[in-house]
View (spheres, rainbow, N blue to C red):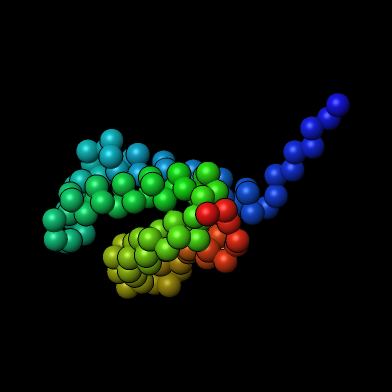
Length: 124
């Protein structure tokens, strides 16, 4: 007897997105250098912001991994990605468009994948 298992493209996208955000959240929680990075961004209460972002990334990543409330979980992650692009990538445009495009490539791809997940029906 064979059990038919099929990994669809949308599931691969879900797994990849969940992986990126779960690992990103762990890096923020466990790497002391990340605190200095957030301080250098000039944000108010940078360490608190870092932990809020990390917790949000982890929780939303787990929801996406488990295919629960995926569209709801993508909304805060889309916001995080937009702010990441604005705070960390847009300033590099002064070095030239190619430098900006190279620096922002992964953030833009994640934003597109999050939008794809947002548009997919999921289990509540």
